[in-house]
Amino acid sequence: MKSIIILLVLGLFAAEVIAEDPAQTQGVIVAASDATSAAQRLKTLIKQDTGLTFAVVGPNQKQDAGDLQFVFCTKASRSEVKHLLPAAALTADLQPQGFLISTETNATQAVVVGGDSDGLRYGVGELWHYHCALDGKRIVPQGSLSIIKAPAFSKRMFWNWTHCTNWDDDLGKIHQTKHVDANGTLEPYLAQPNGFADTFQRVVDFQADHKLNGLIVWGFINDAHGGLATAQSVSRYAKTNGVKILPGIGTMGYGGFYFGGEHPFNINTFLAKHPQVRLMVQADGKDMAGTPCPSDPVFQQWLRDGAEWYFTTLKDIGGVNLEHGDFFQCHCPRCKMQRSLPENDQNYHWDMMATQVPVIERGLQINPELWYSYACYDAYNSALLSNPPKFLGQYPKPAITQWTYTKMIADPILNPPGSWPLSLRPPAGTNRSIGLLHQGSHWDVKRQWWGESDKSAVAFGGTYSLVSDLIQQTCRRAIADQSEGLQIIGQIGVASPQNELNYLALEAFSWNPQLDYQTWIDRELAPLYGGPKLSRRYYELVSRITKKPQEIANDLQEAQQTLTILPDPRQARRWANLISELRRRQALMP
Image 1 (tube, rainbow, N blue to C red):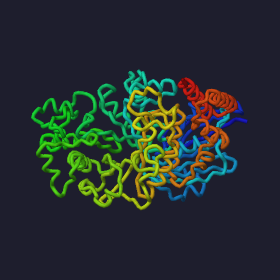
Image 2: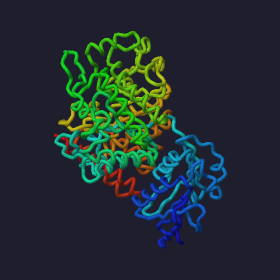
Image 3: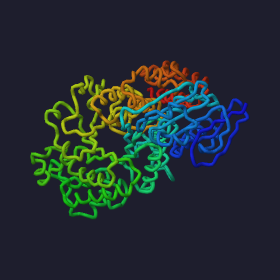
Image 4: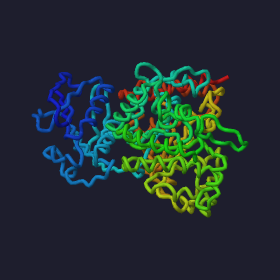
């Protein structure tokens, strides 16, 4: 019997692909007029994971009866494919970013309806990775599905520096990252001709496939990797795939608006051309080179002009992430006078506010839909509750305060008892909140002996740590505080098994913070690793901290044997990555 799949996308030419091999599934891809990006992504995934090529057609084009039919649309466009939808899909009340997945008992039809185009994109990722089994070149959707999902957190984000980001498929190359690993030499973001775009498009693809919707990128505009044109290309690609790019903007340091290059809105270029601008005065009375005084009037105008240029030029970004410079505080007489006023904070929070509010105010005038987030470098605690900082009432209400959850969650190494009781809430004046978790990055400590090489290129050692349990606990606690979301460091590619588990934890618990941790391992991860028993065993092998050579050798042999029985190439890739990781651990042994 010939196998045909039909997936529906309006406005593209029809082409029929028929597989003569009954053990091989082929077909066409299609849906409604706003489903093109989601359908193209599925086409890419099918080619990548099965080697099959699917064409793309529209709902009004002739459809040959086949063994399996996929139908994609959004709530707004489902009338275009209503003749193909089950009754529940026609009437489901779907939330923004949410989706419906429906399959028939015999799995001859699979439907994805998005609450919006972003939700459709996430739903297609969920369908392919969690509900379609692969057996060689056979695609087998799970039957009798009826799923409606919406995220608990509206913001589910990675936080990345360009120079620390390596998403190579080869684990060995990941561990040669120049600014992360001992003796590392690789800088993927600078690889020519398209290293920056290729790297961050990989990150975006994973995020969208796994229902994550924000990517903070520090070092975003840099002449060393294509300048403005490449930055615009990456933000456009991300927007098309349901991921918001939030470039990092330094309002006293970190390059300013234009991180690398001689540009009017690069902070070093600005200072070189305006020598009259006062530099920040440090506590010892010395000027800090390359850092302007926050109260300098010429610098204040530059911040407003830079914001005007930025938000009118980068039309496809989803927001910004502002930092003024870690705890920078100017001690010149003018800034000291400002901090002494009763309406202002008397510490670095004033410097932060004074340089960020002009940027956000101008941005809101140009595009009020963007996410304007800013790092206050603080956790909230009982002291802040009793004496709320003044800056909270000085930022525009749409601005999003980024708290440091790192210091709050119960952490067996950094903060065993935790400092986030249910009685603790963001201080008065807080309008909107998100949180950043440093755990699982090189700004963290080493958590497992294999979490970082002993001679790391950085001061700390947690880049390759497994912290999925802390991510689950943070999501569960943060939702009680009406947090809008969580950021974790997403710099290391999924060829590193423990880092991928961290990212999958963010996916699962940011959508459902009440999900039980063991249920996540046994049920949610099962389709990715070969079933409940294998997902449990995979997690056990990744998390093992044994230093006994024979036990690591036994684990390696078990992973190699498991790899030989997996028919699904996606599962096989993950187990192959585990084999590489276990060999790395062997090499780390003295």
